[in-house]
Length: 86
Image (cartoon, rainbow, N blue to C red; front, side):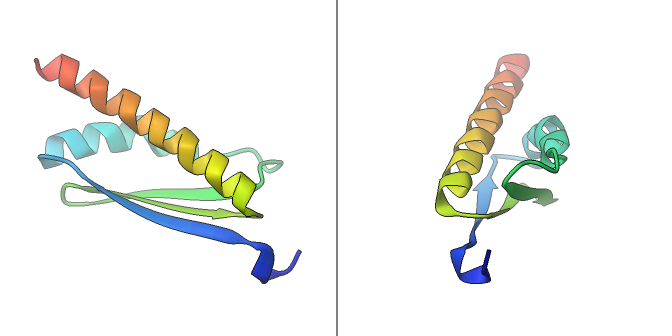
C-alpha cells in the first residue's frame, strides 16, 4: 500500500480543567495498544487540559472507524468523570 492511500487525523479536545483531562487520558490511553491486525495506529497524549489523539490508518474507512471509536470512548470516560464529580 502506498502512502497516498493512507489516511490520518489529529484531534485536540479541550477539557474545562487538567484533572478531567487526566482522568479521560488515563481511561483511553490503554486503547492505543491495538492488535497488530488492526488497520490503524493511535497515539494518545496530553498537554495541560488538552487531550491529543493522533490516528494513522491504512485507508479512510479504517480512519473513520477509529475516530468514531475513540470519540465514543472519550465521551463515555468524560461522562463518568462528570458523574463522579457531581
